[in-house]
Length: 155
Image (cartoon, rainbow, N blue to C red; front, side, top):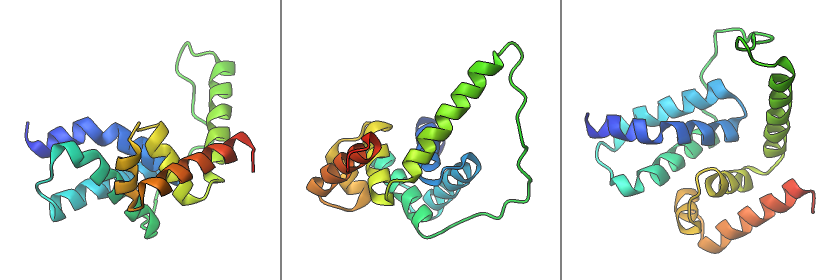
């Protein structure tokens, strides 16, 4: 297994979660991750493994911010069939809660949303968040704090 494949296997799930949190759409998130790895192949064939996640998260955020969008040719299905044996009430409740979380995240300013996702979902240190977002450590702490306050309903 080569270094690129190792990086992909290690970081792709976390990158999809981050991109999904930013975009609010699973398909767009997967496209953002694919574009990130294409750019990694083209622009940075060798990066340090210990800084790979922060680098890849910064690339995804930059792609998202520049408005990169892939034209979707498929039509989204209205409803998915639940897995055999799954309780439809549980599936619907899970979907409802996920939709509420995504709406709440979507209501946050992009900088706060990105900082919060990096801290909570990816458990990055404030130093790594600052590096990924190209801001100071103090600004990273402030963004995470403000995002938490907004989600809690405190203004």
